[in-house]
Length: 343
Image (cartoon, rainbow, N blue to C red):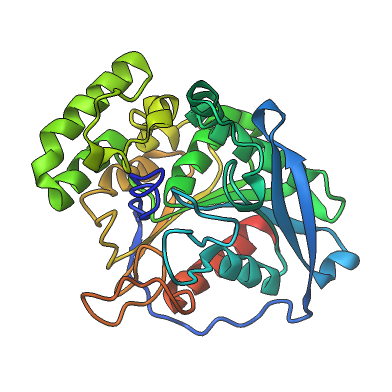
């Protein structure tokens, strides 16, 4: 989750109840096919965001629940693919198809500045700083939910947010900002439970220890001024791009464990036991603890042998980018959403 462009592009973000589940076979709930609609809607500041609405065909006969899907960090698109990763991950596309098979619609979209939503990116540094601000991303999640509700096929009282990695943080931030108007459920996958500043600090210490002191200086200056320092070491420019100040000023100090206490919707946390980016349980425990403290306790599944991208891993060096969603994750997600949304 560190990245915007490289740590932005290497999905660094990568989650208290149930640890590890047996992969029971999932049965399609509505094996009736799907229909897909291309759409566009306005995000914060009037930015046009492009997306896909995937509906189960049962929606032609009755209203169905709906879920907004949000991808992880860096140039990750509506399908969950990252331009800096040379293989197709397709995580959000696979999730959308899973939901449709279970009678649940989904809206997934390209983030501002990415893929089909990338045409309006400003060219000036000041413009880019404003464009990529953390609050804009949070507002875009809320705008996507409003767009979902605009479609007649959707039950307005049975919607959810689902975010992967950094998208989980943004979904939590959006739900917290919406308060009593939050969607009925929230799913966060591969999402850390501690502020990003701690995660970034430890990821750099693990992967680039010689740059730890410089990263600390850059983060301190960014938080103080709202701008990434001009003299940031070249080796860290992929982690802290020049335009990233307003984004990091919001993101670095956002506390997901506190955010989950700010809304009362049912919440499911999914995490891979083999996640090498957001390491269980050390980096997710505060979120697990916060979910247990809620009036409506959250549910947690940490599935053994599963990667950050919720795919099975075959060995210690397998990044878990390709292939189907791990059965344990797939089955829990489908059954939990069917239950809480009434699909």
